[in-house]
Amino acid sequence: MNELPGNPSGANLRSPSTQPHFLRYILIGFFTLAPLWVTWLVLDFLFSLLAKVSSPFLHGLAVALQPVSESLADWLLNPAVQYVLAALVTVAGFYAVGLLTSLVLGRQLIGFLERQFSRVPLVHSIYGATKRFLQSLQQSPSSGQRVVWIAFPRRI
Image (cartoon, rainbow, N blue to C red; front, top):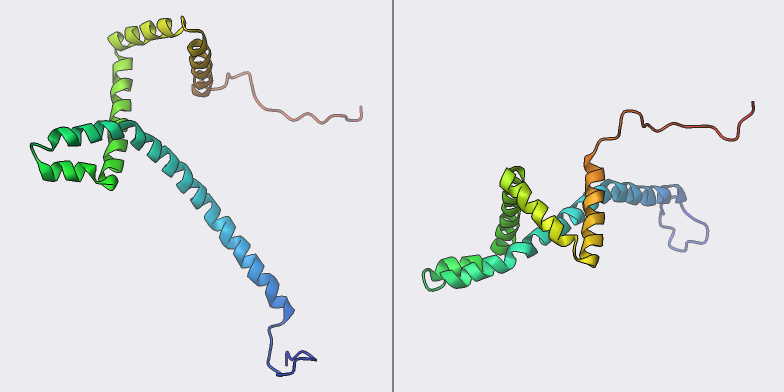
């Protein structure tokens, strides 16, 4: 069978041809789970950022509600509940800012704030560069631009 010479016990051992399958399945498993893992890391990062923005607001709300309702305040101070609610409050805040910006008064307010930012040297540089970058991401490429492949050098 698969007995190796020099094996004193005479036990059957797996052939060397099955060992590459072990490494192969590990790599297949890794490449199967890697996109899921990276997706989880990105979403966890974004969700925790959203939660950190509104967390102080929810903590203050819990302290303010403590004299009225001890159980509601304790519930708001629960880290899991606070994590989810803070992220939801932040998304609601983004929605409110987006809605305000789409109105005439909101556009005037944004214009006023941008003029104020343009007066501060370092803030103007950072804000302006970020705004130009985000605007370039929002625009679709013009109809005359496209990617082409040119073989170079080539025979004539």
